[in-house]
Image (cartoon, rainbow, N blue to C red; front, side):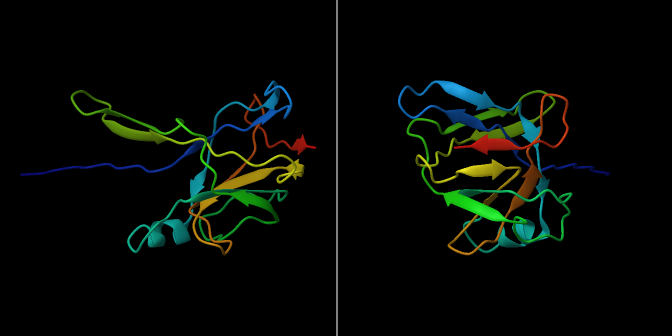
Length: 146
């Protein structure tokens, strides 16, 4: 018997900036992909591997051997209430399980030029994944948050 199994693992990001007084969306990106880091894969076998999101101002090309953002600006563990959901397709191809979670930064916490993002764990800077912020055409861009 010959069994072939192909697995993939990853995340997608969408950044949304809102006006604090009205919750009006002032800027947002399209969904964009990341690269799962070696540190993230190693962490998956020993404990919590995503409990926060970090944003930064770095712009180097993500590579699997990285362990953190180039230049961390802020991190948050605050999950927007009611934003967590799980979906799955287990009866027909393509088979998948997906989880969605929305993190929120407090007003002024993530101020600056945001050009990189990643999910991580603990109080250090370790990351599970990393991505550059992308525009509608998939090119690296920066979002300025006041």
